[in-house]
Image (cartoon, one colour):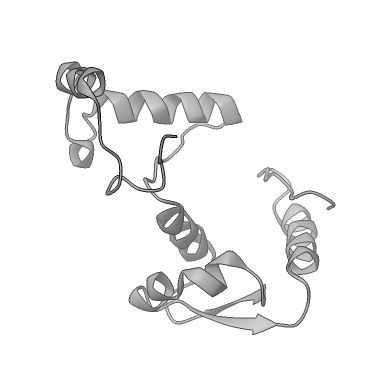
Length: 132
């Protein structure tokens, strides 16, 4: 079995180490990492968008998503079972974005938000969750 939970528990084999040593490199901070640039172009093409952004963790992606809709110190409303409410509190606090839970089921809140978003932003597309 291969354990892919985290890079802290994986042990690359010889072939993987050789592939890493032979891979083209660059600095993503300066926008010259060819692998990241290619991945972002591929994701943008796949989504039919002008650009895409690679974020290495789901926690980081969730935080960027929240910060694109909320200013620091504002609240966002999610259901009590929402992943980012239950498991990502440290990321929220470190960026000063606070959440508040509601008893409304997560799917219902999300569906309402998607319907509102589509009315408010008809030129920007988002993928709906199942059952919306």
